[in-house]
Length: 220
Image (cartoon, rainbow, N blue to C red; front, side):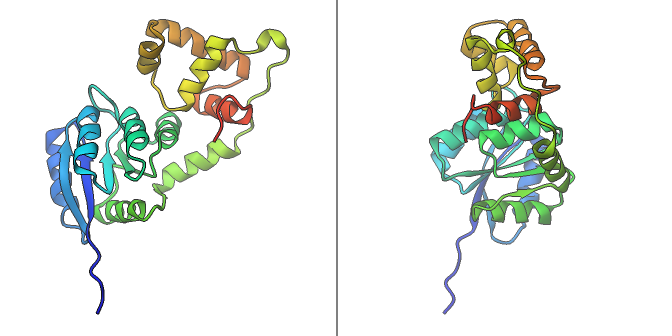
């Protein structure tokens, strides 16, 4: 007698009601998946993750109150057994690396069809990563890109505040979130980041995150 496998229980986090409801109907038709909750923003996604304990959260990134990166980070901190699959319009390096650094296991763009979404959800529930091919290329490109040049002398070393900002960038925080945590303005955060880029030889946040891991500011 074959033991029946329970369906993968998911919560869908998406701020646009029509898209969210359409996704719930679409994904609900995939064999072995049950939609148990819907969240219109990251705050609700975090709350529902705690209340419903789904296997997977299907997460948009650009949402009000709490974006998908921060929501992913909170969910993984509080409920590490819950996996997150990002489903978003963004495939640029910054969003990809921030989401993966926050703990997302899968990353798809909204061009994915229901079968691709279903595969990513089932893979995540089994603890396996599944990335959109474009995202895979970007992650690989970031990994293989030349490392930022090290600071040439002591004058170019990061200050304690700049090092703190760099670690926050590497853990997926946005400029707004960093400003709130440090009790400074976003303009001040941008100034810190510009100095970090100059001192580390980074052209963008993705390279700065790579520098943070390579130099020990952040550890795996």
